[in-house]
Image 1: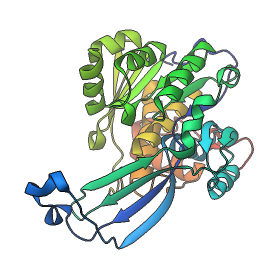
Image 2 (image 1 turned 180 degrees about the vertical axis):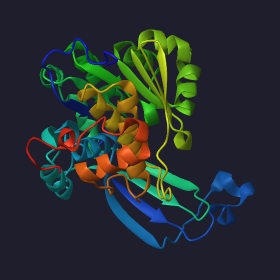
Image 3 (image 1 turned 45 degrees about the vertical axis):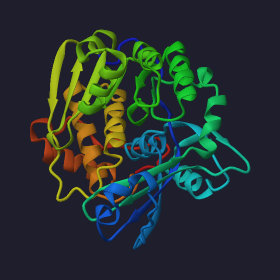
Length: 338
């Protein structure tokens, strides 16, 4: 074993604090560029007739919690929801996600992401935080004292700052995951989050953004954080831990239909592996496979698998690690997720 979980005592489970949102996904059957006049962008006024609109459950916290539930965990979801959250809540209740820390905000809508893509995979997106702003008011110290890991992902900067400090202060191992909010966060907030963190996962571009904003190089972050994961898209990932670098190969998929949410699924898989006290190469491969399931579907929570299906594919994808995990290790104790 790599000793990745030493010092966490009898704590179990994961607390997930980040955005909870609905994704509105639209497709434009053309090219945006054909309808934008370069010399008139200072007075831009354009409308696109889309040929499809789908509403999907999403948000960083929701996506991570979803994959954790598929992997047999009962994650504790922390955030805020609006008056339209009912179908989302029902689906997560069935999965066994603990929603006791989700604040209901009357008269407000759940945070919403609006994403329109054209035939060239260009995307125009906007985000409405809605009820998510109330997450600033949610205290997590008491809940964090009972879990082994806490992950803070992209949401409002105040909530990210507060929850990172509370999770670390309660003795849980903090995964700090600023991702989409790197641009919005102050440099001092990023540095504080990194200093509080036990784990930090980002793609190579996000690491470059953090360095540009904070002055912290990758090597400087390694000196402050025990475990670092670098996701490299189709090239797999690297995990740095205890002075060792573990190269994690990608899982070959028939087709990448939607990369959105793959990083969230990866984080869920990595956390699951750590909760199993698996060696880092095994935990990384669980993460790699969890991400593969996500990219094969349109939408961030449309993939599904049973423990037996996951293990069979794991053993086939990584024959040198066949038998490293068993189906029973992915079955929820409540029996709701597999």
